Image (cartoon, rainbow, N blue to C red; front, side, top):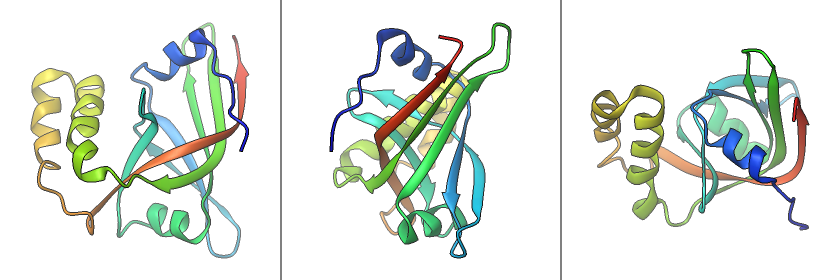
Length: 142
């Protein structure tokens, strides 16, 4: 798989606390969307989900996803990432730090830590930490 080049300004945009919309495919091929947090860092584009959710079941069935992250304030900007998902094998080491980083980014330090603590002992059977391997990126406003 060829690596997609991510410019510095898009990388900075992906680090912002903007809630993304993840599209997965139902069993019949119908798209299903869901709001989701994301974390862009040296570990890649990471997300997490409960393993009992329709979102995760769809990902298990078909690894193709699309993630749209947009800023609805003027001037409008968006990044759409298309790719495939793999579950992180290093989840036991990364889940809590990644969820903590996301929660502090979206909720603030105090509330974020409280939220992340719920995931400090989460079993792999309950929560999946996954990465989107970017195959195509589309932008608007850059």
